[in-house]
Length: 322
Image (cartoon, rainbow, N blue to C red; front, side):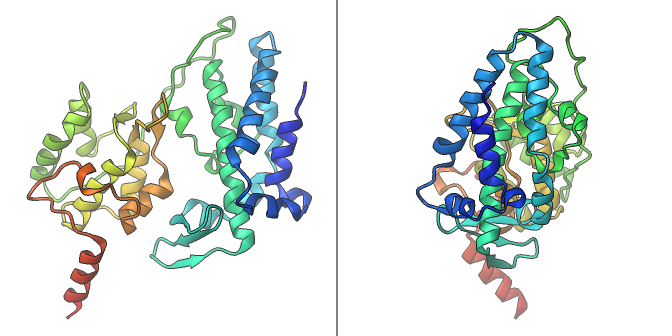
């Protein structure tokens, strides 16, 4: 079995383990293509190794081995937990970022912090491929992580949660019992039932045959499935930003972000399968108006829910202080 690409990826994102300073320059170089240089070769090697395994058990063991090889990176991501998993990140060059904290303080990241961000981006792409392979062969990705004590809080498991059903079922000789989807405890709270009624009327066209389920989640109830929004995520999130600054939504931005990400997935252009809402992007849109859709692309255009630009909101806040 050839694992050269696996080892190369781990070495590049694993300065924490090897202290090879050249990998920092490699990841921060504008000439480095994460997809072309790392993700694509890794995916090709992984699939080749899986195809060489004839049994369900052998494929499962291989995927567990791949997960375990990244185990030591957990300490690295824990050290940079604040910039990776709280607030919002925005890049001002292809590989350099600034971080906006949850109390809205901005700062440019240091070189090593930028390396950590780019390292996690590579890690995230590689683990998306591992999750897709688990789904393809009806293997429980979360169970594999549990078996090797890999903390899933460092992994974006949206693909696993969104695509519960296997793409193919090549190895039914030892089926894994279907796991009941985790119920989300996140809730959304509006100022009145009338707001819920009007919002549901505007949004239900985006959720054909799921209108009743949409109403349930808007009322704060729980579902055992994710609801699919058929457009890009920023169109959906921007509606809730408008609800917030117009006084109809009572949750904090973090609570709203958690609710959206645990309740919905969306149809992303260029992807055949539903994609999870990305937490950092959702929070940045809710809190800072980052990545807002254009006027032409906005949905839920209603007189009672007017749009306000970030500049207008800033002026309104200044006037309130007078």
